[in-house]
Image 1: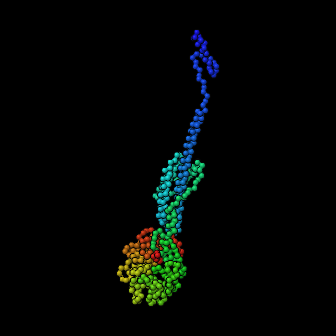
Image 2: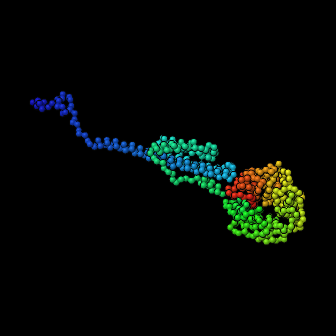
Image 3: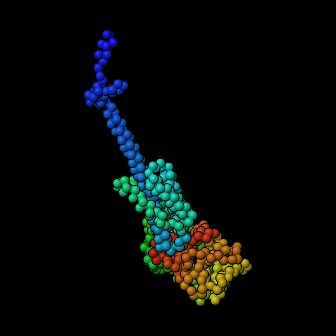
Length: 495
């Protein structure tokens, strides 16, 4: 009874979705749960988070690339700016030196210093590029090519200037512009602009008359002026003095002969003439504080203040006094010949040559040349012995100059009756001759002068400029000064 009731109470299984009866053994599926809103939001959040990470990574990549691109741009602009400054300075150096008649070899030192300065700065810029951490492949390759180009540029600047061109630089500038365009970046102006210090230094040096101190002032004459050239200070001063026929320096005075008078002009052109006395010519005496002044009535000694300290002494007939030596005055005859004459006694001490031409005179020697001869003879004024001979190899000698200690003699030497001459230096202790090289000079109005210390030789070039050479050195330079039509010059010690 109880079992039947239990069976009766069993109900058939029904599919809850379709209502179909299920056979024995089938199990009804559990009812589906409604979807939870939190799970869907989680999936969306995860997706958005992934997108945000990707976007952030892209932003970091783009930002880092732009930063490095701007760094490469700044470095490259700096390198090209320095290279342009160096090229402009080199052109200025070469053009300026050529305008003063100096050869290209005179620019070698300046160009070398310019190259070394640029190479030092390019090395620093190259290091900045090498240290950059670049993620972008295209920019990284551009950076590597820039490093190689800067390294090659440094090498060419200091070792082989013949390889210095823009073939490797121009494409890199174009590729840099392409990278800016790729990232839609405008070109940025470089600030601050780097400076090549040596470029400014080269221009300052070109404004100086000479590349090294000479401790010398040149005093020259034109047809109407006395020109005072302070070489070390790079200044030129002019004093009106028309008609000058002779000029020499005596201490701090320029003694000029003009229009029948001998006038003492201070080297400071701001001061008025110190004194003026009648005279046709003048030259230094052996005594340091006296000069000889020649006039129609004879020659007399004059002191620093223009006062005569001796009565006039008449010269032998048809003679002109041109220099003073320890033995007496050097006289030149109207038809040639050189003599040494004693003004106090009126005695003729020596006939140096009866027809020779005077080359130069110092306190103890007379240099001269026989007509149609190509030998310079140097005769001591106090004795007959020790006459020295210097062959010039089929050339004439023009007016020359002894060094202050008489050990060196500089003369213009060239073909007989020629218009072009080379400067030759004769050393009394050396039988050979030394050709100074550098710009040529001429016999016409030629001027040669030694510095007061005898360590510099100056001469007038064919185009009217002044060349200078340190004794014992090969380099010859030209004063970078526009002096005008200087006919001749002498030297003084710089104040």
